[in-house]
Length: 67
Figure (tube, rainbow, N blue to C red):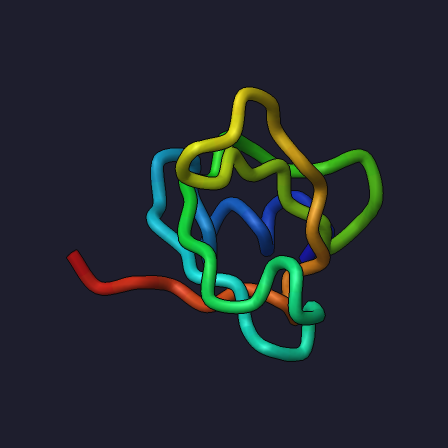
């Protein structure tokens, strides 16, 4: 399975996520919305709540929030 296909299955655009503590103190616990796959395999483009622009995070640093 290709990297972007794996991301699409686990974190489809519009999914709500929370950043894990392993991402560091600045991002830990923040929530946001996935807007798509990143350039690199297993990376996500995410807009964190309250932010103006998207950031790229590795999949290991986020977890899905049940809505």
